[in-house]
Amino acid sequence: MALRSIGIPAGGGVLSVEELRTRLRQVGEERYHHRHPFHLMMHAGELSQGQLQAWALNRYYYQSRIPIKDAIILSRSDDPEFRRAWSKRVLDHDGDTTREGGIERWIRLAEATGLDRERVVSCQEVLPSVRYAVDAYLELVRNRTLLEAVASSLTELFSRDLITLRMDRLRQHYPWLSGGLDYFEARLQQAPEDARFALQWVSEHAVTRAEQESAINALTAKCDILWAQLDAIYFAYVQPGWPPPGAFRIEES
Image (tube, rainbow, N blue to C red):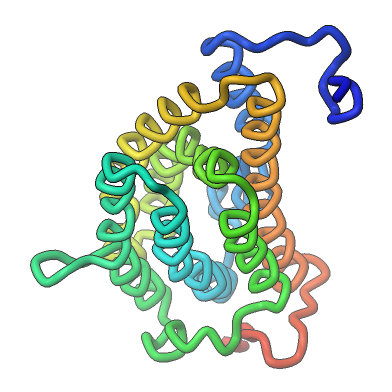
C-alpha cells in the first residue's frame, strides 16, 4: 500500500521516538481543551454558580465512564504485565474497600456547586451531545486497535498543567468550591504516572509509520471528544444558552 493512500506524506519514513513524542505533544498544544472558551471563562472567574453546576453535572458522565473505558482496554490485552499496570487506573477512579476513587471525589465537587448527589449520579439531565461524545470514546477504545486505544489516553500528558491552573483559579474566583477539589489534588500525581506508562508503551509498539500516524490520529480524536463536550456545555449554558428538553437547566436565583 502506498503511504500516500493512508494519509502519510510520500517518502515519509518511520519517526524516531523523539519525533513521535514531539508530534503527540503538538497535538496537545493545538487541540487539547485547555484553550476552549468555556475553560477560559472558568479561569477568568466569569462563570456563574449555575454554569459551574452544569459543567460538573455533565462532566460526571465522562468521569463515570473512565473506568469502563479502562476495563475495555484491559480486556483487549494478552499481556499480564500490561494488565497489571493498567488496572491501577480502574482503582484510581472506582476506589476499593480501603480508599475512595475519583468518581466519589467528583461527586463531592458537584455537591460543592450546590447539586444533590442523586441528581448527578442519575445522569438523567446530561446533555445529549455530551452523552454522544463520551459514548464515542468508549466506541473508540472498543473498536480500534489496542495501540489506538492506549494512545487516546495520552491527553493525560497535558492535564497536569491544566489541573494546576484550574485549582488556582477555582480557589481564587470560586472560594466556595475549595472543599470539593480533592479530585484534582489526586490527579496531579495520578495523571503524570499514567501518562508516562502509556507514552512509553505507545513509543515501543508504534513501530511502523502507519502505526505512528494511527496513534497520533487517536490522540487527536480524543482531544476532539473532550472539545465537543465543552462545545455542548457552552452552547447550552453560555451562548446562546439553549439547553435541550430533558437536560439540566440553571435555576433562576
